[in-house]
Length: 211
Ligand code: ADP
Image (tube, rainbow, N blue to C red; front, side):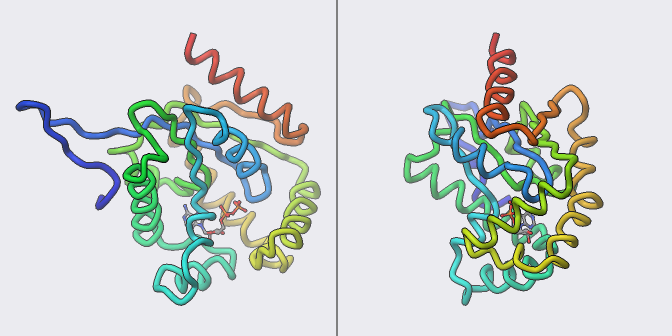
C-alpha cells in the first residue's frame, strides 16, 4: 500500500511501522465523529475521519469528483481510491509531526467500512479495539442526520432517499466488519446515551485494556 508505512532500518533489522489503533464503528449518524473529535483532543490520540478527508479535497480533482459521484448517491467510494487518499493523508500528518505513531493511538473513524478495506489495512494498522456505537432507534438516527445536514451543509443527508440508502449500505457492506474483528475486539456502546456517557463508556474500556 503506497504511503501508509515504510520499511526502516536500524542496523540490519528491518522495521515496519504499525499504527496501533482503535476503531469507532457504527451507522451514519451513530456519533462516530462526535466521539472521534473529543478523543482526538486528548494527548496520545490522533483522530482522522475518512469522510472529512474526502470533504477536504478539491471537488475538481479526481478524488473530489469520485467522492461526489458516490457519496451523493449514498454509496461507498471504491476501495482503491479510499485507501489511497486516506493513507496519503495519514502519512502527511505523520511527516508534519501531528500524528506520532510511536506514541499515539490512531482513532479510526469511517474506515474500514467494509471487510475488504479491513483486510487491506491489516498489514499496517493494528486494530486493538472496536467500539460499536449502536443506536437501535432509527428515528433518532434520522433526526440526527437531518440536523447535521442543515448545520454542516452535508449534501448526502439532505435527501431522505440517500439517508435510507446509506443505512442499507451500512447494514449490507459495513456491518460484517464487526464479525471480521470478532467478539474479542468489539465492545458495544449504547450511542443513544448523551455524548459524555458514550465517551465515558469508551474511556472506561480503554482504561481496562491498559490495566
Ligand atoms: P457518516 O459520518 O455519516 O458515517 P462519513 O462522513 O464518514 O459519513 O462519509 C460520507 C461518505 O463518504 C460516505 O457515504 C461514502 O460515500 C464516503 N466514504 C467515507 N468513508 C469511506 C470509506 N471508508 N469507504 C468508502 N467510502 C467512504
